[in-house]
Image 1 (cartoon, rainbow, N blue to C red):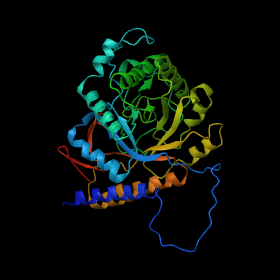
Image 2 (tube, helix red, strand yellow; image 1 turned 30 degrees about the vertical axis):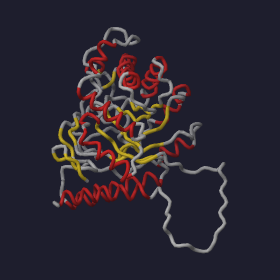
Image 3 (spheres, rainbow, N blue to C red; image 1 turned 120 degrees about the vertical axis):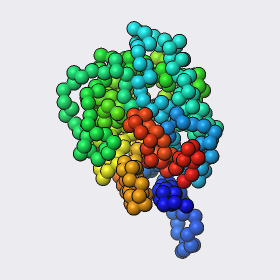
Image 4 (cartoon, one colour; image 1 turned 60 degrees about the vertical axis):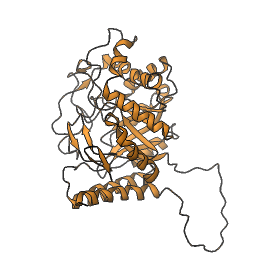
Length: 374
């Protein structure tokens, strides 16, 4: 076995050990008898699950054993499934009315091979007892964007952000006048997934890293986020998906306060199922966890929906052991110690990401011409 295979197994081992730490230690030697009293009314940190990010567009029969391994051997219970890799599938407006979905248009879009593969992946996860978190990413359609916004007053991805793939950022601001159009686009996907593709899902992430534009998502600033999410929540209710829980704001810069403005909208908060944060550095979720704990919404969980390491092109054994194995696991443990309720590794398997665009090597599972191995 080559060095890359060995180190990739080290990453899987490290993540597996992380997942296993949440299980009881059943094999310890018996000691003196102890009396334990449990008050079920008193609750501390709960763990909603551990899991992976999953690009659904390449799903095929050969991936089923890989998914089985992630579930059965690794213990993954949350799959953050991206069904397209971009958010620009509505390349032209479906019609001139954001309150009227053109299903002739959307049915055609959601039946292309990339989406069909993702629906099949989601149904296979359903067959294994997993309800995927449907999560969107990438730039929005050009016609929904503007360049009128002032410079951001918060940190965004760039050369000094430790986001190694970001590079130079150009303006890609989601036009507030078109929030209803964006809501129509993303909610149409959720409607199709539920009613046409027959996917059983509870959580929906309509945006990704809006502070890491344009590659990861359109620019949406913290003060704008509640307005956009409110439009999405309203449309979910209108389309009969009021039970779907939003996962927000999936920010790249973990220290930025996207959560505070969202919590200022009580009606919106009825639809928020989890606050989601990403980290690939030393900053972690602690301040945001405390912000939620001190609010009127302390019951809303805080999830680390992306962690790992971004230097995937250095495929040396030294880098993969110290960064993809050690540093990535330290990031997850740090988040758990600071109160995170879930941790999802980026990425499940090596694959081509459209928004980079290049073949990436972040995966727990090595992909060699669609032969999958740890």
